[in-house]
Image (tube, rainbow, N blue to C red; front, side):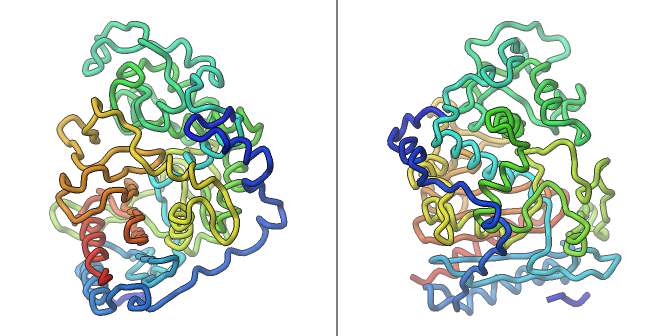
Length: 433
């Protein structure tokens, strides 16, 4: 198959004063209407990278498409603020013969978390919320939550009161005692439905006991979606409207949203299952509420769609210390807080399950952060941050080398062929100074 090619911040109180003086961006409607400026481009050698080594990267990606292991992908790399590689390969829709495009639109799933976390930190810097506020200040039903005495057997476990209430910080860090939408606990109680509103969703979450005392265990969870409801309550805006006005619009992320509208459907990458037996890729059916329809549930944890160019812009803002194209969305100190580990030593190492621990990384606000490169199975630098999405999206940034890389495809399982790991390793090898 051929290619187509609120309160002040405890860590820095002056930030809230700066916000009060209006130094943080409140975008006007005319600004939001402007198209995003194109990211500058450069040849690899101009930014200390090797074109020849990018050739090896390109060959590896093409082989995965040519061999039918993945349907198609878009990959982008930036260094020193310039795009050095942006490639679309394969197919958005194999059966329809629709080629992948540089601006193809993907469900980014958990890469949504950083965007929601950024919005939370904006409200912290404005003094409208504080990270140590209990969630129940905004969602009263959280004050009545109980804890499973035996979370491994929730159907038979007695309940008890938690040692303390969960805070907004706990939710940012996945240490609030909540569970995940894909786990049996929440699935058996129908916690998550795209047909519910955020208000309905958080009440369902509050009705299920916690799997641990807040602050005592790291559990990858639905916390960030709950924070989207907190944003609605504090600002009086719908969550998606807040993001558009204060994050996506100012950053020029023109294709990032909670659904794909009709005029953009021609750029939607479809989802494929990678069979374990090596047989041909199988297109997966739409969700009950397809990604092409505006869902009542705006999931801050996993609901956004985006493109590689849009996500490159987001990560470049992080490396720039909170601004892009002279538009500031967060202070440099706020960005530094988001991209450092906040998980206490007694909760490390963290992992997606008790038997799968990640020895080299902690968690910031929305991203994993490398805290001990010596423990990593691959070449990384301390301070790198990034995350993945459950349908094959992968993004990270390295402040030490001033490098960003984003890979997007739509496959289940997301880790099939370890393509993200291979991509990251080969990008690292393109650095020559």
